Image (cartoon, rainbow, N blue to C red; front, side, top):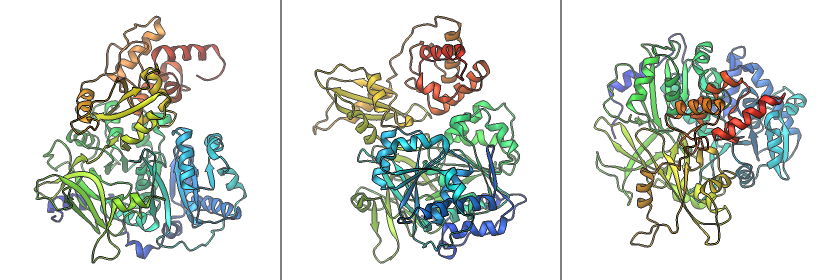
Length: 622
């Protein structure tokens, strides 16, 4: 494993804010804790903006006071302050105040997604043993629904009764910071533990690589429950920069271009699919002159993705790609500017970050020769402690390093190959895990949800990709002999346990699953079948002008025609980003009250037309 080449280092050296003053982020041991570092930014930059959200703009001093109020109110409730507290929010400054407030108590938080099914949220709460759920007003009803015997607290009530005085508690260097749940190989979500030192390490690595400074304005597109949210949140708030949240689910991608200019964003952070969708919407020649860095991660980045990004950046703009996991936030990084040659169709994930050694090994744990594919192992000091209440999983994934106290190896399950210049090319997954729009998905969890449907005897899920599109999940199901159940009904029931991004696009009923010579399910056969499988199509034409208008919008959004009025939008391959685009196209015709919820509730042209017609007849919003 070589060092960083001179050309790569030169790009990194140019990755600076033109008018900003960058200070090196020290080693985690020097900082102390997340709270210590944040409160230092408050002292230095109290009057500067910490959060710029159209519904909530806060300075560092204001955000700190809100966080103190949350912390004091939580401490007043009594009990063990080191227990986990669940957070159920979308975006914004109040969410950040709640997050910081929990950390100021010496506790740690468990982020929940408001878009997950209640059954999944209830499972996470049970597994995490969280005693409290803190939510904003919009999500308080859901918090109460899944709380069980726990307390569901309105964050506004905490803010109104807590003192603005800092608690002044000393938070240990190795104290837990948060517990984030990812798709689990056991068929259930698993919790990954992050400590204060882990957060400070990956924030320091990114700060020193990106030269993050107080003049930066950094995007936050994902919810707190998405693993990728931690980097922009801490990258901003631990460096005196301004965090700029934008709710893609509610507002769609179409307003993003104008918002970037209005907020003078300098640092974009997202999965590649979001920029791809933006690039489709902005007119040719669009430029974002303030933007100095576009950071991409969580999914494959292609050469044409970088070319699209370059067209929107000024001459000093830099594109960053990399590889990280929930267990090791930053493993490798790769920078390109306008002069960097794009030699591979898939962009490399780069070179190991500070204090991290990357190994490629075969099935026996031996390093593979240069140019061969091996599993990516990470040797480092600042890895996750492991999986919450799952010592068996922790033992399998993390290995001690003989003769190096404090260092461990994490077996990522990802495959890679070293390029001649020492950069790493990501080659996919060893196991059944896939990534869709940046979300890490264990196929076994989707299979578990399908098998929970009454009457389903067996279920296998495979992923298939066409070109550069995100993988599509295809389910194959065997029913009990006496059961008559349609694939769409099985999918609908499975969605009661799965987030929308984990739903299979197709559900195919089989009399029996194919087996290989060893008597195991032959996934290769199913994979080949999925590669040329399309969802069952309906060809019923529109029956009136409204359905015809909807049909035209659907065809333009999905790039498929003809589409029948009973075709399911998501079964046709519609993603959340497609849904945002469709909603943006509907709003000029039907008003701003049209939201993604309407499309999720009525995913066919016929159903959506019925809903819109009913809305026109009623005084309320659509």
